[in-house]
View 1: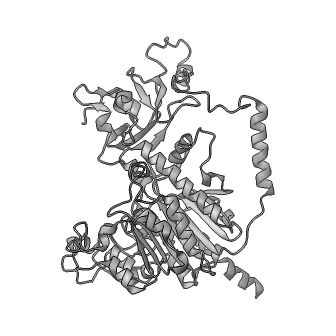
View 2: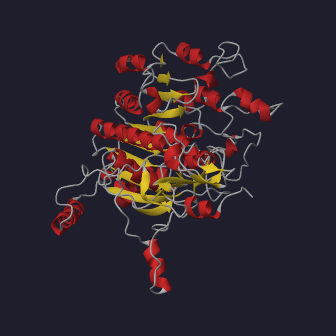
View 3: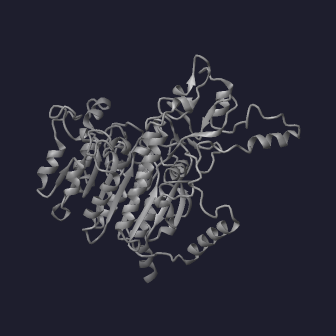
Length: 529
C-alpha cells in the first residue's frame, strides 16, 4: 500500500532483529541453531565507540558482586518513612517511557549512569489505559494521576461517562484534583510546566472540561457555537475557577490563551479580556513575570501569587533556548516555585511537568527528547536538594510512553544516537534508536527506489534530526506500555508494585492526610478508637 520494500519492513518495523552480515557463511547446523545464531549475533565493535566509558574492574566478577552486595545492604538498611507528608512534589515526564529513561542515561556519560530520580529508593509501574482507549493521551491520564479516577481520552477533570467535546459544564461531572484536596487542607498549590499552562497535563491540576483543546474561548465557540451551557475554556478556568484562582505558583508558556487578539496581535481570545492584567489588578502582591531575569529577581517574601508566562506558545526546547536565554530552565522554575511555596507553614502540593519530552518524540526528534529528559532530571535533583525527605514526598512518573525503541547491539562506549555497529539485511546501516511510526519514515525511505536511505547520510547530528520510523505518520503515536513510578519520602514504599495510574494521587493523599478518602490520619483515628 505504501510501497515499502520487504527489507525495510523487516528492519525498521517493531522488530529490530537483523541478520549479522550479508556476507556471513551459510549455516550448516540445525535450523534451530541457525535461527538462534541470527537472533543473538557476535557483532564487531562500533568504530565510533570509545573506551573512555569503560569502568575499571568492570570485567571482573568481584566488581559485579560488590555492586549487588551494596544494593542489598542499601535495601536492608532502609527504614520505612511513615511520617505525615507536609509537602508533595509530583514530577511528570510527559511521554517518558522506560526506553526514554534508559537511552537518556547514555547522554550522561554511559549506560551505567543514573538519572537523578533513578536513585530513589522505591519504584513501581502504572497502567495507563483510558476508559475508552487502550493507549491514552495526556488529558485522561492527567485526570487519573491528579484526580484519582480514569476517564475518556481527551477529557480533563471530569467523570468517565462524559464523552469528549460535549458542550456541557455541569458540576456533577467534575472530579476534584489533589491540588484542591491540598488547598482544602490549608496547603498551597502550584504548577510548573514547559508547555502551555493550559495544556492537557497541567490543566489536570485545576480544570474540568470535556475537551482538552478548549484552551481559550475561541476554541470553545468553534465547537459550541451558541454556548448556551456557558462552557468555560481552560484559560478562563485557570484565572477564575475554584482551584485555578487559588494557585500560588503558575509558571510555563501559553500567554496567547489569556489575552484577546484585539489587545495583542499574538492573543487568541475573542472575549475582549486580558486575564494577565486582571491577575495583576486583583492584588498588588500578585507578581507577573515573562522573562528569566524577572523570575529570578522575584522577592517571594513580598509575593502572594506568582504567575509567569514565558512564551505565547509552549516554552522552547532547552536545546533551542541555549541561544536565547530569555526563558528560564525547568530547574530555575522549580527552584523559584519551591522557594515561594515553602513559606507556607502548612506545606504545599506542587506539580512540575517536563512537557516537551513528549512533543519531541512526536516529531521523532530523539536527540531533543533525550536532552529534555536530562533537563527534567536536573530539575528533580534541585527539588531533592531543596527539600527534606523526612517531610517531603517526591514522586516522579510519566503519563504514557511512546513507540520509541532502543536496540541494535551497540558497543559499550558508543553514542546511542549513532548507527549500530553492523549492517542490516539490505547492506545499509541502521540506527540504535528508532520509532515504530512517525514522520521519520519519509526522510529515511526512498519511495522512488523503494528502498531505505542510508540513515547515516540523512541524520546530520542536528537537534532536529528525525530518527527512522517504520510506519509513515504525521506524528508518532503514544505507547500503551506501563510507565515507571519513582518515589522518595514519607510513605514512598506504597508506590512499589504494578497498579492503575489513578492510584497515584490516592497514595499521595494517604501520605499527607488529604481529601476524604483512606489516609494515614483516618487509619490512626480508627486505631485510637
